[in-house]
Amino acid sequence: MTVNYRSQGEGTMGVSFPLCALNAPAARGDEDYVARVKNLALTAEQYALLNGTVKYVGVTPRFRDVIKTFDVPAGETPAGFRIESTLQADGLLEVDLVRDISYDKNGMKRPTRMIFSADSANPYEVAPIAPLLGNLTCNPGIVYDLFINNPQANVGGLFKTREEVMGELGRILGPGCDISVELNNPFEKDFNKILEECEQFKEMLSEYRLVVKVPHTGPVNADNVHELLEGDKRFSKRYNQGSTADALAGHNLALKLREHGYRINYTLMFEPYQTAMALQAKPYFINSFVRHRAKLSEVMKRLVSFFEMTGDRKYLEELRKELLAADMLHKGEADCDLLEVLRIAKDSLAYRNYNNAEGSDGLDGVRHNLRLLRQNNLPDTRLIICSMEGDYNYPDIDKLMADPEYADMIDRIVITAEPQYLARFTSTNQVVSYQRRFMNAVNNDSKK
Image (cartoon, rainbow, N blue to C red; front, top):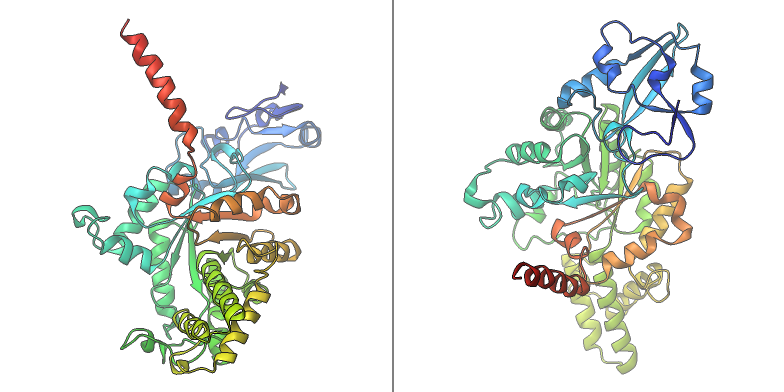
């Protein structure tokens, strides 16, 4: 019997028993694997239930595969997996490793229930924050524009392909971090080609870490996506004018990939009304994009207010340009009636709760999505809060996380941003002030 026992990390209150206290031998061939969990803490109730009933302790095929896949040091289990067990009818207690990024190595919980993630494909940028992450997200823009084709980031052009980049990121991040990789072409008509792409990523990252990013597609499809690549790159339909098949193409793709065993990060989620239908695709991650939506709300609010104060139509003309730039109007609506422009802006602001406390911080979508997650039947689905910038986005999110309303949802939250953005909120002005004092004290003492 042990009290407040943990072989690794912090202790637990009360009385607990290590698994080896059951005095049950390891199943033949599983000795080295069972040794990795011999100090797993059992509660007094669990010990009373199992003592005398368990004849052998063994591990599942998945347990063995995880250890082999990540070449885990002897005596340990890797981060990113929780330890579960099943008592079989013949008295075999079979121990398993189940993917769960809430866990650090050796079955210990991470320090906080919410998980931190990074938006980056730059191995040099990811390395300093890697030990603190439970997820990494990258899309083609991040991989190619911000890293591979950016000489300042891809120093010396060392990395040539997405495969090289993802392989290096997997090495840096280790087994405890999920890696969300977006499909190069979600409009590919040949599903087998999409499967081939996913298989390549699975081979590089392992099935345990890979999460496939599938985007909402809206009115864009394989036949009209060229509009986004040619000429002025403007689209000829409004975002909500696509066919039913086009609007739900991402949902159906996500479901098909899930049927093939892939976990899905369902991305490009900006308005909370997208969420309930997105959940029907059974995603592993859903998203709340914060930055661009909040910035556009701020612009709409300012221009609508100026128009209402002055009656000057120039503000509505400027508003129309903003809506065109944000794809709320399509390219053929450059002369859209200004009253229609005003209506769209006012309706959007009302829906986004931008004039009240629920949404003035731009986080009404986060609140909505957490409430929906609380009601769903997908216990492993988490919300990624992403796309943030400026002095207030992260502090406002941090404040929301401390709201008692969401205390039961913290372990469903993943906060992701560029590593440099997260890093800026590790410090305050007083850090510099106190370091000045401390270092001068040491320096003066050394001169004595």
